[in-house]
Image (cartoon, rainbow, N blue to C red; front, side, top):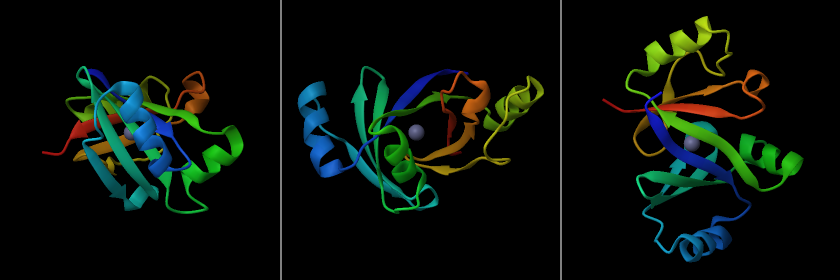
Length: 133
Ligand code: ZN
């Protein structure tokens, strides 16, 4: 793992939460992006080299909608940047972790991503992300 890249926060409404985080962090949201594969719209804030990613569901059956129904709004995942995502996925699999996708998939903010099953990470959903080449 290279460094903490971002913290993903599940929210019910970006139109409510973007101004809230702008006020909280004293910085503007610099990007909003729809990620079709995850059925979310994301909004990004930059804080001292790391990012906060707000996630609003676009689908009542989507993962974020389900998460909010079960646990409410809040921290959804922690993302680490890696230099070689395939090598890191192989290393983690060999170390006994379970990946939620076999291949890196396109994520927000020009990244290839892979999630780890929270069952063996102390219930924390971990995302690996690598800048698209
Ligand atoms: Zn993320």
